Image (cartoon, rainbow, N blue to C red):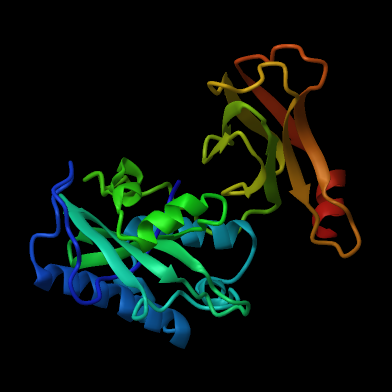
Length: 297
């Protein structure tokens, strides 16, 4: 279960885990302020402050995705409905730092400002320390409706759920992903249905994807181009899963012409209880005729 929350309100409850507990209140307060300022930039649509307070890795990931969908950057950064949660009314359960990474775990009525009645859930904020200081590196919302016993434990002050590895910084700053240079010619999406399996995809040696026991589509970073494209995949069973379950891997090319449906560019599918091939590379060709259908010229 993954997460993401904000800062540190008054006193962060810290515990000696495998990661270093928050070394002092000053740093905890600083991390909280980083999030508060980052949230303010999102609300005010302040691109310069957003860039200053967002980690390089996250900036690249966000820009890659926006461009891969042929949206405007940085305008689209601020186009989502709602707003990042305000943590002032949330309880800071844990704030930890390990090396150049940090995590803050909050509990309470996490409100994204999209209506409805928020319930008690978790919000986890990740931070990375870069050359100019600590930066916001992402937030995750952990909805507890499916695990009500955990919600009861947290309300009662039992924090063992948030003392697991998933809620702790690992000390590793990931390398920045390959930055694409601008919008692709064609928008592409990877679709995977893989009950009981883990599927890894690599599209055009640029866009990597991980699917685990799910049905989901992802934007292909860098999209597709004229001529030959490829999709590399690997499949492995998940413990307890059904090895005879069906599986589907597809790449769709998304049309920008109104009323035109997406084009299924390539597919690997098993429906008859056969064992899927563990790994392979599938190729597909975007022809001039397909290109006209996708972008109208």
